[in-house]
Image (cartoon, rainbow, N blue to C red; front, side):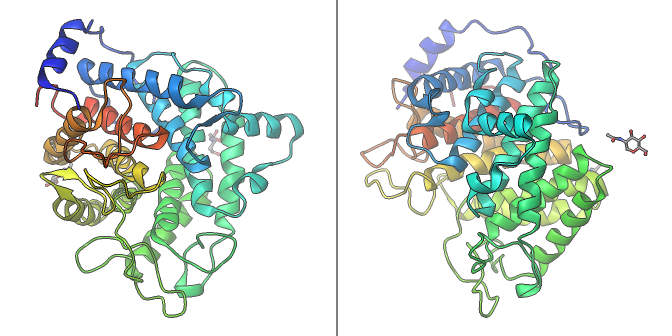
Length: 393
Ligand SMILES: *[C@@H]1O[C@H](CO)[C@@H](O)[C@H](O)[C@H]1NC(C)=O
Ligand SMILES: *[C@@H]1O[C@H](CO)[C@@H](O)[C@H](O)[C@H]1NC(C)=O
């Protein structure tokens, strides 16, 4: 836990940067904002520790992570570099298991992705998002994004093939074809809608984005509280009543925001706000996100679950980027700052590792690892862009 005194001494030690180079986050008309140097500096310290303590350049993986959480961490590092304009971890993508597979596909012309994702259609889509983010960075430094785009397309085609008419539509969670769940379909909306922005000539992206949005809207995935449960009962297509994981409440918003950016259908924003606002009122403690398994005193989440809050924050950022509306940005600014403050004052240890518990000081329940550190990092990155520029709150 960081004390205010520690914060003040850190602030004194800061050399506030000149305004960072403008991010080239996507080809989309994304709002460019001045970012908060103090919070970017904090994010940088966390990223430095994440890379030195957890990233294994030999294997291309993060210790304690899995392919999908690693993809999220790589995306976080590139988000940070695009925000600051720095090149500190420029080689990360090519050292990672993702970049190794991209290089293999480039060299052989054969897609290795089916073997890597092993029929996991949610994991495939986290990889697409990481590859597209790395491509943004390659464009930013004047390098060729094409190999990353080609690999992302190979992954996309695998997922697209997992759509069928069971329960009226939707992609399966995995090649076992036995579960239609929220995250896989929210991601399919998100990658399809972003694909439509990145590749406007490939009309299948927009077609799929509209199809995914329409199917999700008429499905039972969202409950009467406005929150997405884990998935559907396959035999009845009813909501299965399983956990309302926090990440599910914002990946839907980033997809709806991206589809809004293309269609200008304002109802999509309103739909996203229903779930974001339900999460902020129901899945928080003292205004700070608290996963159902989070506990300040007892370690009870697994290494996947501790990544979810940061994914919520990252996809809230993507939603605000796409919506690009000052009223809506202002609406979420206080919430965003509260999360980063919780991460900083309650979640972070003296080594700049971040634990899983953001809502209260750690009393033995906070779980530390590469996935929890990456989760906290995402909260700092969005806060530098959209939260209050004040470390002492
Ligand atoms: C999209 O199609 C237009 C019209 O055919 C063409 O001029 C343009 O180069 C294409 N853009 C891309 C990125 O392929
Ligand atoms: C921005 O959001 C506000 C609040 O939802 C809305 O009233 C306004 O029409 C939006 N502005 C635009 C340009 O869409």
